[in-house]
Length: 317
Ligand code: CP
Image (cartoon, rainbow, N blue to C red; front, side):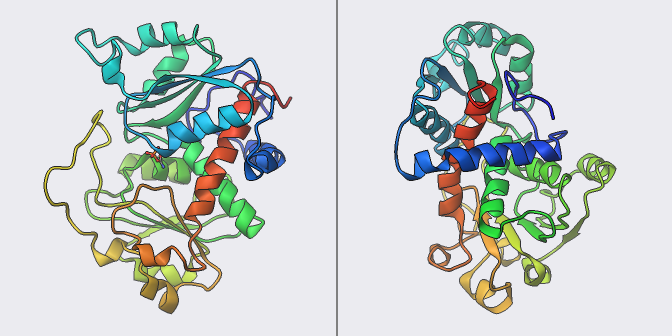
């Protein structure tokens, strides 16, 4: 297995099976710190730099919370408009990270351009963690989701997945690549115009992922052990900011997980994940049902970032 020390976390493509289990093992070791709301000194003397060129609630704050739980420091920006990258200069990724690398020991970057964190990693001498890049990938979110399944089900192999939402979404790409390392058939449900690209499907076949596509959640929900949902009513992820103007569409029933659907069609022990934020694709009355695991997923978001920071900064090897 490759060492995590000093490593960039850019994509789940080519993330090896043993590496998933190594990350889960460290997450399990560190989880009591977060559960007991303690702070430790594991990363004392280390600093996380947050470089967020797109809005975020969970990804930025979970990384920051994780760093603080481990005794490290945090600096950075949550709005590139307050930096030279977001004003007249439009400072390049290269010039920006050639500065940021002197302000800390690891950088988590979210960007509206696919590939921006990989570009940053070309120039930075410290690890870059991809916090979501355009329609590209969101590896730390899907590591969180896989860890949540591992915790809730005790395994990942042998579980059937249903993924519902916009398949252009970065989480869906990381999910598909992540599942290539497990024995997990997956069914995708998405609207016309939001389907997996032909290029992506060819790539997934190349990695031997067992997948199919159907039109309506009702066609696949009965078989699913894990139901992962994302919105189909979405902003444009290639923009630095996409404000809501006026009314937004409602989610068609094909892509909606209602309480009635869960009660009548889902396996009684299936689990329902959503990385959030949500629109109306999971109504709030689902939250208290036994299927929902998205608040657990949110907690695990901190635990997973603790594991990744500890690994890339060498606190665990
Ligand atoms: N799940 C997720 O990436 O949420 P944020 O956009 O709030 O970071």
